[in-house]
Length: 182
Image (cartoon, rainbow, N blue to C red; front, top):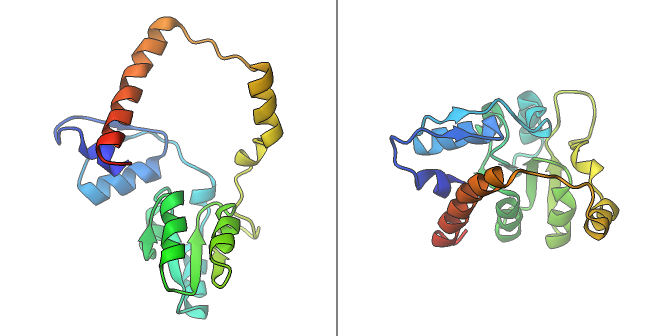
């Protein structure tokens, strides 16, 4: 995402969506001043800075890793910030034996599968729930995807002029991604 934003001229105004925390991370990282859409992922906004600090005291050898969609108070404690693929690769390649993971808990299974000798500790939320699961992501199932593809429903109808207008930025983003090997 950083490479895509960097592909625009520095004086080019950008409205960044859908995640304000990701946009703020990019703004900070590359010095942009994008207009941020006021949207976010509920999972990435529930992490407790105080509880992460307490976990670091309990497991001083553990590295904190986080998705850039987390709020800044969480990212300040991160040893590594990256995409899902980036987090998986980092934990696999890094010699550390313990990681505090600030993102949706579904990634922990993949991390454990790749590195069974390592410990993966979910970053705790502010609330008293021990879960970091997105209830919206859990609505998607393989069966629902299969049925959508099989029956081609629900159908979303978009007027041709909007399809053509929306296709241009998608093509541009894919072109930029290809140029940067993303």
